[in-house]
Length: 250
Length: 53
Image 1 (tube, one colour):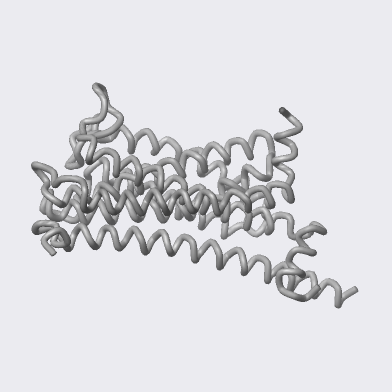
Image 2 (spheres, rainbow over the protein chains, first blue to last red; image 1 turned 90 degrees about the vertical axis):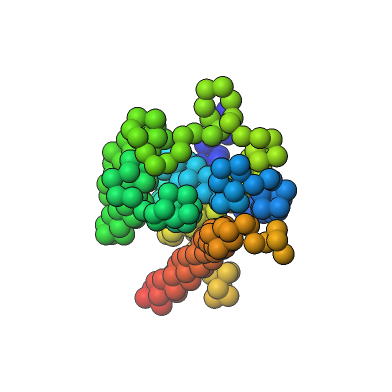
């Protein structure tokens, strides 16, 4: 068991193994999303209250879910990197940040587009769900800015990890904001007492989109972490050889 | 055609889905670009090192 983990954490081994997973994750993600988009737009019936505007959930919910999932991965990886001084964990945290920022932006933007016809406003300052999700975007951007500002790689890892861990308090706040405070945002649809409050023909496309986005996120995260690993190991023989071969300067 | 109109919400629905596609494609392009840039940088530096030696 431990030898397996040690081998996995060895940079060249991780680099090759991750490359094998990326095409499978990406294909599964594209297929699920293709079906999810088709079914969400054309097979699912319009909502009895929201009409066709409800179809925005098929991109909004997966994006919002991954904005939180990416932060959780980032914070846990940063914590592991701090405690056990594991370089690969820091690489995972650093790779998750830009993706998390993009998915948070997508969640905010699609939420805003939904809010316009449903609530009559693009944005509501002071709304707990909207504000806490916006803070999440700033946490990602702050994390990336902090990393970029520190030249020493090991120091950047440690400082940004502390920021990621402190900011993690925002994750449950976002999740429970619609229950703790009154918000324009509707309550939970899927994970709630009494099971999902949604019809099967609306639910299956949503599940396909959530899993599809997750697979795509997985592929993107592996791509990002591979780049991080290369940069961190830039003085190692295997990376030098790989770079020379890739650029044709060998 | 009526299907594509999405009631009176066509603009909102289609722009949301288009934005999602743009963001996903941007993520892929950005990740690939960064990967290639890092490889180029490493190759350039190791060449410099060789010429110093």
